Image (spheres, rainbow, N blue to C red):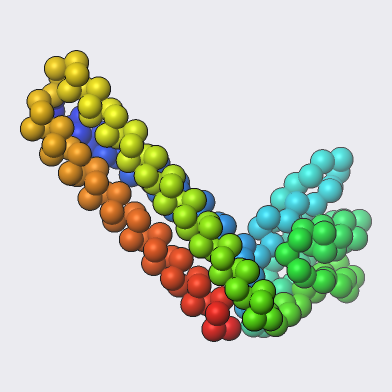
Length: 189
């Protein structure tokens, strides 16, 4: 068993853990913190041309000021559908159209809503940690399977397990940092 195989295993685990972080980043970006951000509209899907498509495929999203988003719709016939999609997305926004542009004011958050968003952010972070731990478990299982087949020694299993645990700990810390930053953003805006 060579170090390249260990490197390949670590690269695969890292790629999968990065996927969990990317998913968390998307989830946290979609939480409204009182500040305008194009990520707020990422989950919005618009009924266009006979199917549902992401908002970004029919319009440009811009942030002209701290508490306002503008959505520049490319096809004038879709302005109403875009407005409806944003209103019905369940993110608490009330858009209004102005020709081909849809203006989306970002209202102030109440204390109760801030607490709900903080809990939701915590849930997203916990789901990301669960995903990272599942990747760790897969890595540990792979090393134990190699030991059972007598491909690697017991010492190699210990070394690899320590490396996988260090990698996991690094990703858990990154998740905790991302959550702490988002929690602070939600509670202080």
